[in-house]
Image (cartoon, rainbow, N blue to C red; front, side, top):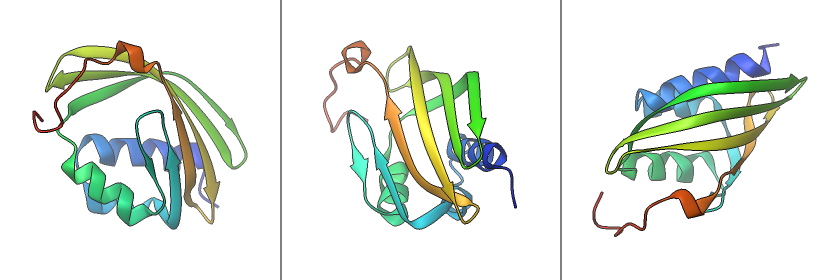
Length: 120
């Protein structure tokens, strides 16, 4: 069985590289995501939204906690486009069948600038 933390780290790497095909390969078809600003109910919906994302960003892992099929990552998300900022986030993953089955993201939306959807 693949290590759950390796699966999550490889997913993050593919996401940052905007390698959407590779990112998709780490998600179960029925992947679900919930965050304060959006949610997805399938892997394909997630990837479609990722492709439309106008952010250029990277992350710096602060801490990871891995317990069997569950992984929690606390990280700084550093955005350089369409605005600049660093945002502390926490994402909780559930791994099933060696892929990401679900994720829930937590962060303070008050730290995000107000954006026009058409600006990115």
